[in-house]
Length: 360
Image (cartoon, rainbow, N blue to C red; front, side):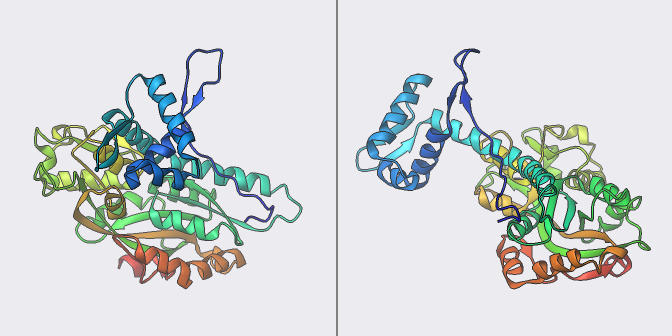
């Protein structure tokens, strides 16, 4: 819990609007119930998971079947209950929305939390983290939620984060660099804001980045070259992201213009949103970290190992707030959590390096 005794969270919500004079009907309860039925395969177990009575659950389902004008469940004798195609599409739409919006909402909630806490009489020191989205960053925010220093998070692309650090608008800037052939080009991409004489690097993790494809890989996609095939639909990361820049570098190495990639301009903001996009059948391939592919049951094709760093100013290293953050990052709880993320390696988490030491 925060110093003020409260923790702000923002969540997306659905409402069905019948007309402009009313606030609409919330869908949160029926979506939760459908998700539980999808997970356990029968209504009784879903009722227990959602904490509602069997009668209440059927009332919800019947009400929304009337509203939508189509069944939400398919019940087969001795085979349990499953979602109808309409309900499956509804649930996948909700998963895509959550994957797309949750990082932005978490960033806004963190910003609001810090703004309010600064007004409290016992407000303590806090650090400002601008970082590209990643699961180790999410985990750090979770591990910092009830500790000091406070950590204000704003999701930015790697270049935006480093530019913010250079301008004095944040204390830590999160960015990733692929190991191997594409490392020099990515460093040139960052060089305008990454100054070896002024900055130090905190190693966060090494993670696997690659292609997401539908489970079973029905299109037989094996690498970046296959993205130029006419039968492959691609979903990209947003303009300005380091992951999108990595795709550009890989295509350039193969002599493939981006105009040959069907769906190249279709983009998502997070790894999870890319995975949800593919899992729901809207694309055949995308790019992101292995953790997201695993969580959505997709196949993963490794393209690169990336090191993720926090850049800080050298003058900030000995500040008590920064030392407290480092202690948490080096602790067994946090390193253990990051280490169990699929595709992540936390062996060197919390290690301090100069830019020259990290990149030779």
